[in-house]
Length: 228
Image (cartoon, rainbow, N blue to C red; front, top):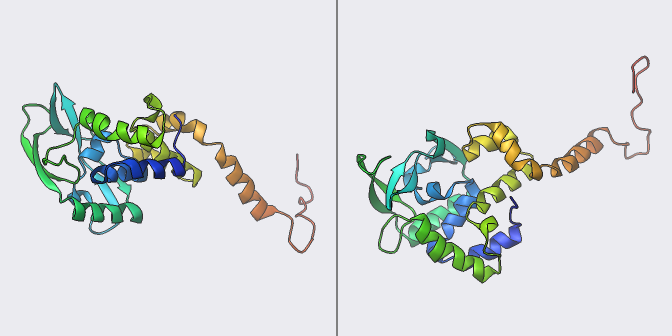
């Protein structure tokens, strides 16, 4: 799993059709899965604090779309960065949210109507196949990114994880934001992104215990204590 550098992400976003750019922001800025991105509603924004409630996804079952709980059946909330919040508001001005009715959990489930931020120009819910072939892959090719399995939409989640880990976020918090049931799974998945923590450790210790700027000696060990 190789996350994208910010330069690649920025270039790619510019090549995504404007109607669907918010999908890139929700993936890289909030760590949402593809089906969760398709199911985001203005009502999922918390009016009291900057978080986004992830309560549903859109799934394809035997050729038909349904609403379903997020993977693992558990809702969650993720921090909503100011940048993503602003782009969501702008997106809503440019592409008014559309009420979409789909069955809940099964093809014969109770119909539910949700205002969706992302829809087709005809006001229909997005499907994985339509989005991947009509939106994602053209932008991949236009950006000059290899069109392979490493650069599917899931790379946005990996990029989100990479940014948070590099900033010092804990595995436990990242696991909650990504909707993983077990932080151990998150650690195993993103272990290769953790070496940068060594740099943070060195900087922290140098700052706290380093030689004083006036030229005094570094702190000495206390008498009687084992310094090995």
